[in-house]
Length: 349
Image 1 (cartoon, one colour):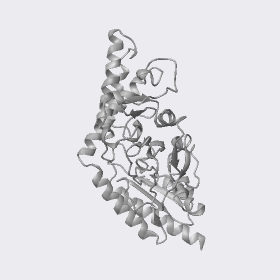
Image 2 (cartoon, rainbow, N blue to C red; image 1 turned 60 degrees about the vertical axis):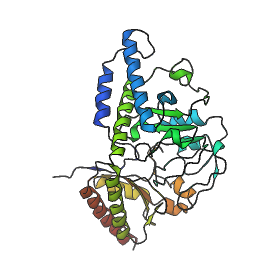
Image 3 (cartoon, rainbow, N blue to C red; image 1 turned 45 degrees about the vertical axis):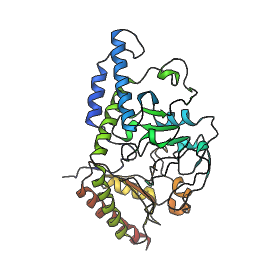
Image 4 (cartoon, helix red, strand yellow; image 1 turned 180 degrees about the vertical axis):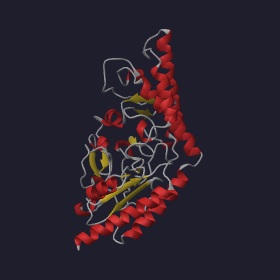
C-alpha cells in the first residue's frame, strides 16, 4: 500500500480551511450584486462588509481601512506604482517590480532601512522565514507570509499600507486586500466603477471575499490559541535532523527571528530541482523557494541578495509546515531526505 502524500509547502499556498469553504458555499446562493440597492444586492453587500470586518479585525485595523483586490500581486501594484519606493532584493517579485532594489541585506536576511517613508519592506520572507523589524512610518509592507502566523496590529505598526492574500492563511486563491492608513489617499489603478470606495473598480469577488473573511477570523483564533508553537517545535526538530544528515548543509536565516513554520536549507552540490523532484517522487511536496516563478526552479534571488554565491543559492530547499503537519511526517521526511542525500554523495564520488 502506498503512503499518503505529505504536504510541506504551506508558504506557497495553504489547504482551504473548512470555515472558508462553508462561507464560500453559502455565498454561492446569494444572487445579488453587492452594488445593487435592492434586497438581493443588500444581502450580497452584507457578506462583503462582514468579511471586511473579519479581515480588519484579524489585522488589527478598522473595516474602512481594508480594500479587497484580486490578490497580493494586484495589491502590490496598487500600493507601490508611481511612488518611487526603494526596497531590498529579498522582497517578493510583486513588490520588486515597482521598487528600486538598492537596500542592503545582511547574511541573516535582515534589511537596513534609512528612509521608511520611501521604503517597501516585507514583514516576513516566504523563502527563508526571516522576520523584519518594521520601522514606524514605513510606506508599504508585504504582510502576506506573516499574516495569521505572527502577532501583528496594523493600527500599532505605524505603516502606511499593508498587503495580504487569502490563500496564505487557509482562504481561497485569487483574492487579497490592502490595509491602508486612515487619511491616506490612494490613486486607483483599476477604473470604471465606484467599488471599494472608488479605490478599486470592478464587481467584488463575493465568493472569494466571503472565504477570505472566514479564513482570516479562523486564523486569528488559531494564533491566539497558540497553534504555531507546536509547529515551531516540529520545524526545529526537522532542522536538527536534516543538518545532522549532512554536515555541510546550511540553515539559512537561523541567526534571525523566523516564521514558526519555515526552514530553508542549502546543501552545496545538490541542486534544488533534484531535491524537489526526489522528494516529490517520495511523496513529499516541498519547494526551492517562491512558487511565483512559473513553475521554474532557479537559483534563489533572495539567497543571492543575502550574499550567497549563485552555485550555493541554486542548492536551496524550502520546507514549510502547517498546523496539520504531524511529527511522524516530519521524521519520515528527514529519513527520506538523508537517504537521498547519501545516494547523491555516492554518485558524486
